[in-house]
Length: 297
Image (cartoon, rainbow, N blue to C red; front, top):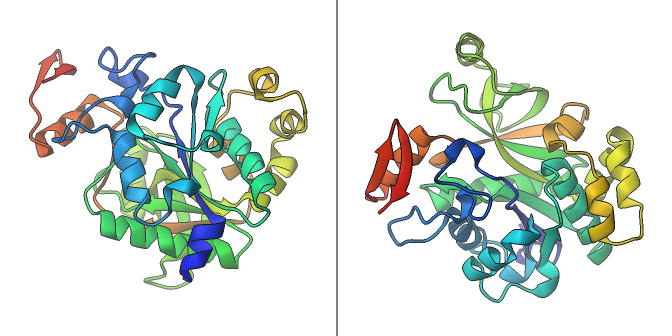
């Protein structure tokens, strides 16, 4: 891929809206999990996400969507973020409106904008492989009017993740058509998914042109689309958005969704078991009670 395409038209959009309710009381409304210092160097998962993606996309093209109450935390981890690159939500409305908000803002800024949407709280051990997967997804989204989701090869029948059923035309194909998105299943169902060999974990990373996403929103999410059309500013309009995920509002309905298989030492720190696994890997000591981490030392 030509370097100027990444520099001029490709934007990373980091979503920092998750409240980390499954990690309470360690994670709080004031300081959600993305801002917890869990790395051996004391950095946060959000800070590491910015560092990783800035190796490929310049910081001038990194957009952060966060709750207005977390503005100070964002600026502490992402120093000198451009004023126009911090999109503040007056209220939390899940990933559907957050992605719509960013897509609309970037489409206005650059009609050729392509977005790489990244959750702020992922733990990655192999950055080089991670960036290679994202480059492949960017190439595909540049050449096709499609949304690319990154799927992770499941290592166990986990009930903590959403699943993606894929259809590959030939063995070894890296980018496959998505047949279905499934929310977190029960253990019996998850075991069946793993046995079938047709399912991947949903990483929550999406790549698409802003114009493509806005078309899908118009088609499948009329309530979100109507709010986008209001000209009263985010403070007044944002609370009118429905509280709905991108998966429910768009991904489960659209037909031009493709999945790129990723393998880069990924972990979604969404439970105390996964958090403890990361803390041990990072050689961080912690105090736990009844299976919950209550303090990181």
